[in-house]
Amino acid sequence: MRKLIILLSLALLAGCSSLSVVNGLTPSTGYNLAINLPFDPATGLTADVYTPDGARNAPVVVFFYGGRWSEGDKQEYKLVGQALASRGIVAVIPNYRKYPQVRFPAFVEDGAKAVKWARNNAAAYGGNPEQLFVMGHSAGAHIAAMLALNEAYLKKVGGSRTWLRGMIGLAGPYNFLPITAPDLRDMFGPPEQFEQSQPVFFADGRNPPLLLLHGENDEVVAAANSRSLAKAVAAQGGSVETIFYPKLSHANILGAVSTVVNRVVSSDVLEHISNFVQEKRNFQLPSIQTPSDIQAVPLEIEMVPMSSP
Image (cartoon, rainbow, N blue to C red; front, side, top):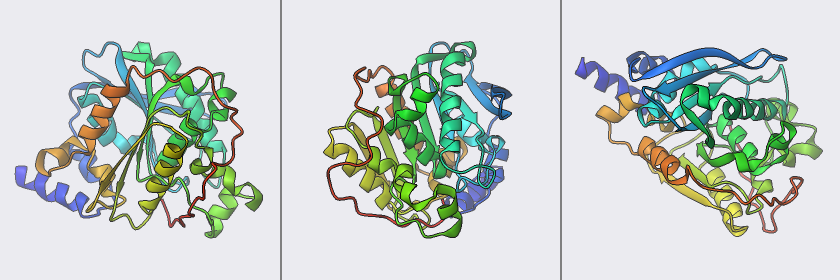
């Protein structure tokens, strides 16, 4: 059995696109799982919640999965829910509407509703609503970053960035102009609104702390995205940390979160995420916010074309 685990884990880290292998090996113990909890009846969207055994006033992470804003489902991310729960974190994994059913900013708006639901219901699942984080991989990291950097989305659901203790991004597209792919131009258009979809243009120095993790071997979303966002946030005096992995690709930085992979392959991705949550769980964002319609930072932004997150 151990040999099988090693082979399958190495296959994932080598770039296996399917999550089913690791999910199949992911433990179903150590946490309680509540599935298909409605958080937006108007759209029928639901979330799954992974609660660590005995959780009480635990930090809460809302995780948004990737898939080019056009594919994916929460049930495919057991590996993330279990990994976070193993570190004493309540994990909320919501679905969101996707292209071509909707276009930007609908999926970010869905993310804001999921965050509101998590805050309102955290206590019922052993979580502390005052220790709330957003996290995402790829397109999901874009959603998480937009929520952390552009307060308009949380304000629309009656909240603010003061709800968030931090944001964790794995291989996120934060600065992907010019947009040239036809589907992305349709998704984020019209062209005069492209900048509104770029997290980098909303750096104002008043963001909750950011942890940006990226693989240097990422051929889908270049690591320059994380460097660009970190530079913009730091220039404004905002809190941001970056960690770059020379050998990790776009897919296997997510696989490296898995406790199955961590047992057989040296990886500190989950460790960094867990440490960040524990360090920032009591962070307090100043209540005085700058206007949420900020559209640019006063520095030159190097555009980073994107392939298919």
